[in-house]
Amino acid sequence: MRCSTHSGSSVSSYQLIMKNLGLIFIFTLFVNVVSGIETDVVESVSVIVGDSVTLQTDVTQIQSNDVIEWSFEGYVIARVNSDSSNSVQVNSAGKFRDKLQLDNQTGDLKIRDIRTADSGLYELDINSPTGLSKKTFNVSGVIDLASDGVTVVSVIERDSVVLPSGLTKIQREDQITWKFKDTIIAEINPAAGLFSTYDNVVDGRFRYRLHLNNQTGSLIITNIKPNISGLYEINISKSSSRYTTHKTFNVTSVGESTQ
Image (cartoon, rainbow, N blue to C red):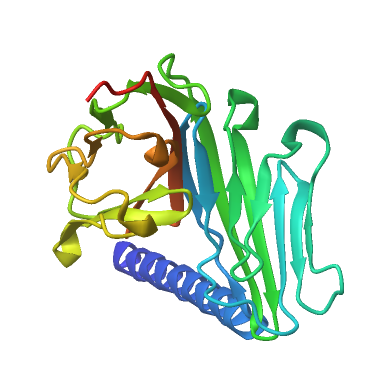
């Protein structure tokens, strides 16, 4: 009988502990919901050294009374205050000199020319009338000896060039855009069935000259002419991620055509 009584007492104690744990969990969840605090999520971001990356807020349009703040290792590096006359502020000194760009519509933070010293935790705080949300990005600069900032590509006039995407194979969730001087000239979005080049933009100078590698997303430009020299940028993001990586090529035509 003693054994039976002792066993029942242990079961009752266990049930009481589990009940208390459940109440603590519910109370914590209730406090977070009432206070409007969104649970922090850490997203890992790997960027080739020399490339750029945009960390996204998931905000489509900053609203009145919104305050968006970006910090690196605990120090504020960028801030958007919709109620302030000086609404957009970025750290223009120190290690981030001329490397930060803040989107004044969404608060997205672009970091140009990533270096290993730029690796670390980037924290996003969004304070709005509906509450406070936090996100953290763990950015790592990955060394690639073949990449160092803007890649300079010299092409003999009338020859062709391949601008590599850096991907070995396009995945279904990949979203890729190629731009020439901020104008989209090619897009890839396998999930949406999109695999297109736009050769009628920029005064039609790319007509019949743009092609995409259907395995890697690399851009092929044929019959290079001086009027299509300039900066080409590839932007790569995934539907499941909250960041976009960027690689820039400076293409120049050299020599003169004899034809």
